[in-house]
Amino acid sequence: MKKLYLLLLIINSLYIFAQDTNSEKQISKDSIYTQANVPGEYPGGISAFRTAFTKVFNFNPSSKGKVSSVVSFVVSEQGQIEDIVATGENKKMNKEMEKAIKKLSNVLWKPAEIDGKPVKFRFRLPISMEFHN
Image (cartoon, rainbow, N blue to C red):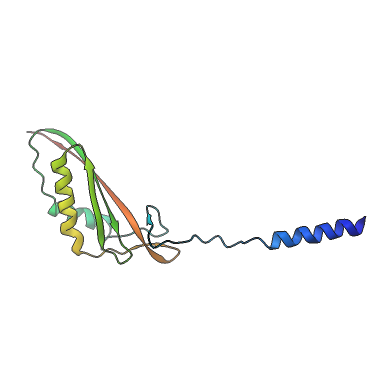
């Protein structure tokens, strides 16, 4: 009986050691990530990006009140800006946000990284403004 228990214990141990303990994520070239170990970064950081965006963003509302929009874009593995899309209720503001990001697309970003490898990363920039006449 002891030999049977010992044999079962050895067989069970083999199954435990046969398990794959490699927990690395598979990184796909086609995937666009929203979370990364190291996020993508504009040269000089987010404050430099916001300053540059403010300089090229040109929006004159036709009415007073609050307007909100979100512009999102992909920073490629090479640091290039791609797939610019702005969403919000004010179509004119959306269009101006897309234009502003296109003007900044000549600047290369530091790409996002997962496990030390550059990946495509979706960046989102929400903007809310209130206008008074």
